[in-house]
Amino acid sequence: MSVIRLPLPSIVSDDVDDWGRDAGVVKRLGWFAGLRWSVHVGGTEHLPRRGALIVVNTRRLALAPVLAALAIGARTERPVRFVGRTDVAPLGPAMQRLGALLAIPHEVAGALRAGELVVLGAAHRLDNASCGPIDHDLVGAAVAARVPLIPAATISTPTSRSARVELGVPLRAGRRRRGPLAEVELADLARQRIDAMLDELGGTLTGTPLDWFAR
Amino acid sequence: MGSELGCRVASLLEDEPWVGSLAGIDVDPPRYRLRRARFHRIAPGDHDRTVEVVTGFNPHVVVHVSVWEPYSRASPRRAAEFTDAAAMSILGAAAECRALESIVVRSGIEVYGRARGTVTRPDEQVPTNPTSGFGRALERIEATATSIGERVGVSVGSLRLAPVLGPHVPSPLGRLLRMPAVPFSVLANPPFAVVHQADAATALVAAARARLDRPVNVVGPGAITITQATRRGRRVPVPLVGPEWAAVRQFAYVTGTPVPDHVQELLHRGRLADGGRAAELLGFTPRTSTREVIDLLYRWPSVIHVPASQPAPGWEAISA
Image (cartoon, rainbow over all chains, first blue to last red):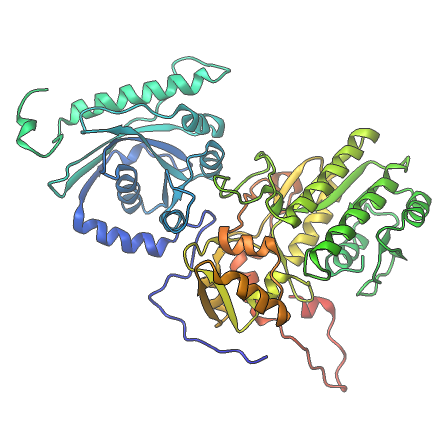
C-alpha cells in the first residue's frame, strides 16, 4: 500500500484532553478574547487543588461562563471547563474544544470527580445587579462528587472592555441533609452569596448613564 | 482463545500463580504456543459439546472474550449471531458448574451509546443505552452474564473496553485509520479513545484475579480526533459533511475497508469513557495512552520480513 506523507503543520494543535478540550484552541481564543475583554480575576486563592464547581451570575448575551472559564484558566494555568454546550454539530463539537460540558449532572460529576474546575452559570439576568436561579440538579453533581462549591461574581458591560471575576469563599451547606434538599439549599446559599458579592463590588451594571441612578 | 485478545489472555493467565489449570474454547486454534492451557476447538453454537467440555473441566472462573466485532472477521449479521451463540453456550455451560465462583465478560464502551444528549464521558454509573448493533450485542452479553450470575449466585464483572487496537487485531477502526485517505466529519470531528490490546488483556486477567463483580471501563488515557490521528499517521484527511457518507461507505466496502455502524457513530459522535475506576477495582490502569496506540498503529508493518538466516521474532517483540 502506498501512503501519501504530509508535513506536520505546526499551527494546528495536536492534542485534546479526556473531555475533548483543545488547549491550543483555548489559548488562541484567549488571545482574541483579550481584544474584547480586559478581565481582572480575584480570589483565586480560594480554589482547591482538586475539583470545584464555580457558580457565576450571568448577564444576557455576556457569555459569562465562557469569560469566567477563560479568565480563571489563564490566571491559574489550569484547564477550566464550563457547563452549557449544545449537542448538535457544528456548534457542540466546537464548544467541546473550548472545554464545554453538557448540562447533565452525570457529565459534570464525572469532571468534578476527576479533579477538574467547572464553571456553571446561573439563569440569565438583564444586568449584573443580581444572580438568577441556579440549577440545583447540577449543584447536586458537586454534592455527589464531594467537591466544594465556589460562588463567583462576574461583572461585564456591553460598552467597555473592563470585566471582573471575583471568586468567593467555598460554601458549606448549613445543615447535613441526606436527601435532595442538600443541593437545593446549597444552590440557594450560592445565589445569596453571589448577590452579596455583587453588592460589595458595586460595579457597573449596564455600562450606561442609567447606572448613575440608585437602584 | 483463537483470537489475538483471547490468546494473549490465556498466555497471561498461564503465568498467574493462582491459576491451577486452564482450558479454552474457540472456533480457531490459538495463535501462539501455550504451555499449560488445553484448547478445545468448538463452533460457537455447539451447545452440547460446549457443555460437555465446560462441565468436565468444572472451572472456578470463566473469562468470556468471545466477541465478534462487526466487519472485523465477519459481517455484522454473522458477527451478532456468533457473539450471541457463543455467549449463550459458554456462559450457559458455566452455569452448570458447581465450582463456579466468578464470571468475567468482555464488553465495550459502545454499550453507552451516543444518542443526542448522552454523557460525553460516561462512567460505570451511567445507564447503558446502545445506539449501534455492536453496542446492543455487547449489552446482550452483559445481560446474559448478569442473569446467569443472579440465578446461580456468582459474581459477574464486565470489562467495558474502548475500541481495541493492536497488531494482528482485526479492527474496522484500525483498518480505516491505516488507509491512505481517511474520511472524517468536518462538522464534528469528535474525540475518541482506544485501548491497546496488551492493556485490554492485562485488564481481563486482573478482573479474573480480583473476582470483579461489577462493570468497569478500561480506556487508554487521553483522547484524539480523526484529523489529529491522520496527521500523526501522515494520512490525507477527507472532510465530509453528510450526504456523501453513504457513497464513501460503499466505496470503502468495495476497497476492503467496510465501516460498520458503530465506527461511523464514532466518526460522527466520538467515543469517550471515564476509566478512573479501573485502578481501584482492578489495581491496574492502561499504560499505553490513546495517542501512543495511534502512533503504534501507524508503525505496525503490514508484513514483517525476516531473513531465513535469523530466528523469527517472538510475539512480544512484534506486538510492542
